[in-house]
Image (tube, rainbow, N blue to C red; front, side, top):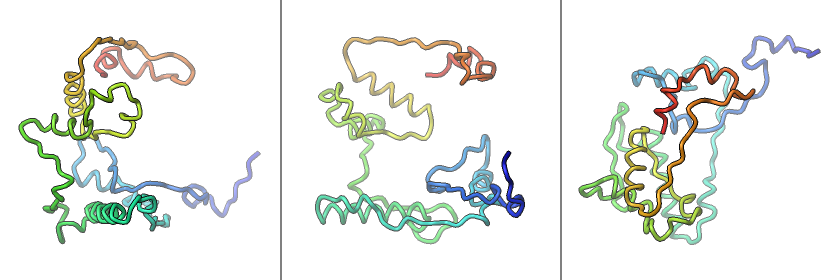
Length: 196
């Protein structure tokens, strides 16, 4: 039998302390077919629970503590401050959600004729020399806003790799094990076959 503290029955989460981690500016919630306003209203800051939250801010950038030299630590500090100013909406001067932000030339990639190739070449420098090194791939990533862009990047990288090709086929059904109970009824075989 569980005892319930009646004083906390009407408080959020029954008066229990809940820790939310992360930065709401980093990853916005997904609102299918939602407008910008719908997305803003879906963030935790717009929730009725927000008044019950206490915001704790991290004040020490731990990456700056492990800098190998003073000059690299200064560069990292400057970059970190610039990223924060962009995230906080302070870069580019006062604005109503849209601003022109100047990006330092040393962190830009010249797109040339083929921007996808430029991004891949700068991220995976000497790819063919490191193709079998797992650590090389663990240290690099290309982030993309949509799955369509991910497929374009993947197709480009695969087109540059030569050698024996092996295709691994997936199943066209979801396992009916206990952990997947009910899931196999939600997704059709046709839908599963569209996933790459």
